[in-house]
Image (cartoon, rainbow, N blue to C red; front, side):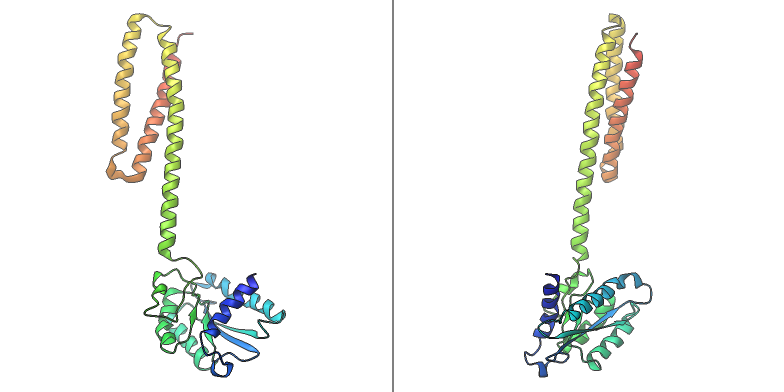
Length: 256
């Protein structure tokens, strides 16, 4: 399946040009010549792994006979992640090597440096490894296509939603534990009131009401809306911790 998919992707570049092999640079009856720039050196070397993987994968396809009798000749060159080098290397690929199209090159600034050059010459610039949103602007650069990874905007929305879900889960967990601690507090309160004198029972009632008023007011301060998500978490944690501490305190007061 992967072999068929990659074959379709590569052939889409060749098919976007003239159907006749003799009129399509880089495409013959036996070969499809493809260009690519990668940061094999420089500050972005770690991002060149896809280039090495594609070279190896295409070699495997060629060893198995290629695509419809054509071997893929992927010319993957180093641009050091420098836009001026990308421009120079891309010109060599187009004007000297005569590749059919550019495939899977990495980098937003590097590919922006050659987008106009390639589109003016109607050379497909396919499946750029970049999350920039601008690659979908086909009215300006119709021969340029992103697609290797989602846009940074989509990624940001996903992680924001994931963060919101994590926040909701944390709140739910804290509320559930607070409910458990509140049950303990009530049990200890009832047990204590059953073992003390009416006078002390009345005193405990006033103390408990005063404690609830203080807890709620104090924890509400933590949850000031200007504090954002972390403040709301702190407010819920404040209620939980105060309730748990009060439950323990009342338990210690129960006569044995």
